Length: 199
Image 1 (cartoon, helix red, strand yellow):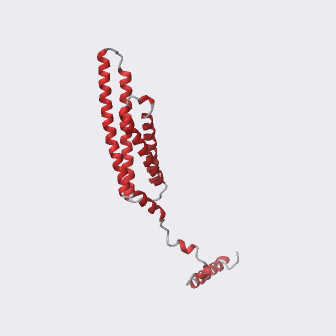
Image 2 (cartoon, helix red, strand yellow):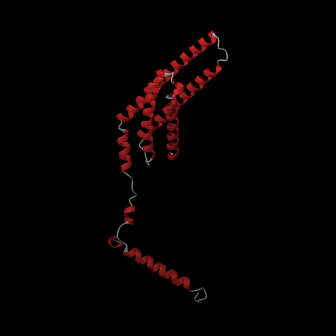
Image 3 (cartoon, helix red, strand yellow):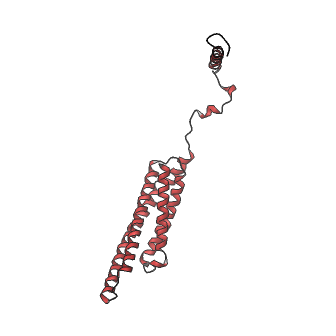
């Protein structure tokens, strides 16, 4: 289950980082107001993605780190939804103007301004969330907690007995002798048939 969750978080982050990169491309050149915030989100999410990859290699995470990972995933989903909505609306506006009259151009321009303003506001809110989550990671020293939890692996206390020299074991002569006698007795009983004949 944990591996599945880690795989999902990695997949989400890859998708979001790729979409943020696309927003930096030439197609969205006229949306300069959000480019700096988008670049910040891309850089910060790339760093968080690296931390998530490191966490994926750990067997057990403390509850604080699990909570942080879940917040990062939720935030990544929200960012992806915002990007998808924006890209969809920009695409609709670009193809919806069949009429090239003055009123249609004004309407398209106003719609585009409204759309950009709304997306800029969303990106700034998401940027604030990213900063909060990043600060929380630093404040609670999650990297140190994750490193310390990965360096201490719980070992079954019975494992040491597997590597102990047989001569140094104490108190096993009696039970070993009893087992040998039982095995010899069983072999003697099994070697003769009920009629007293040897098999």
